[in-house]
Length: 89
Image (cartoon, rainbow, N blue to C red; front, side, top):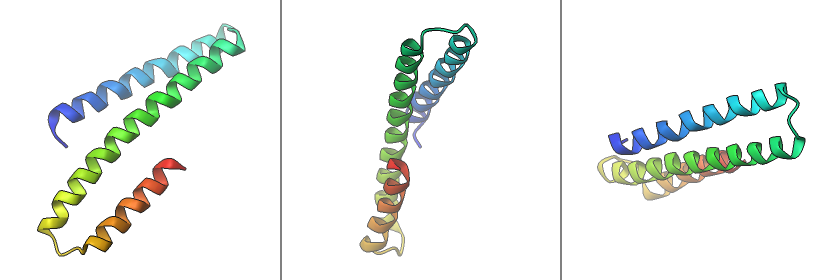
C-alpha cells in the first residue's frame, strides 16, 4: 500500500474510533435515540468507505501482481470476488 493511501485510511479509521467513543458517551448520557442512530449510521458509512478504499487498493495490487505471478486471470478474478463477497456481507 502506498504511504499516502495508508495515511488516508489510518486517518479515516482514527476518525471512526473517535465517532464510536462519542456514541458511547452519548449512550452514557442517555442522549436521544434518534441522535445516537444518526451517529451510528455515520459510522457505518465511514467504515464502508474505508473498506472500499482498502478493497480498491487490494484489487489494484492483486491485478498488478497477477501479471508477475503464475496465477491465471480466472484465479485472480475468483480471489477478488471472494474478497468482495466477504466485504459486502
